[in-house]
Image (cartoon, rainbow, N blue to C red):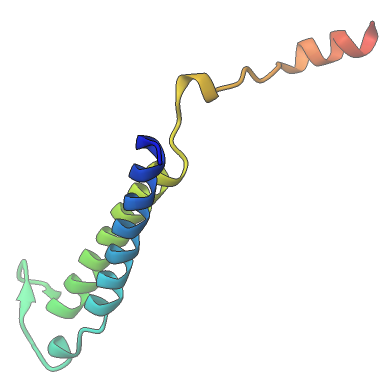
Length: 90
């Protein structure tokens, strides 16, 4: 197994673990009856879900980097519309 494929495989398990952790943390039964305000105005349950949303965003960004790594050799030059029309005329 090459280094890149083993890194991708271990990265897949890390992402799966993070998603499972987010699913467990999303079940916030402990904040249902808590009247605590965060920053003096935000209910703690809402703050908790905002943090879960940020965690989900970071997990998705990490999953994107692991699943679709961009290397300079993978980038292809996209032809412009002008060159397409010039080729069509020829």
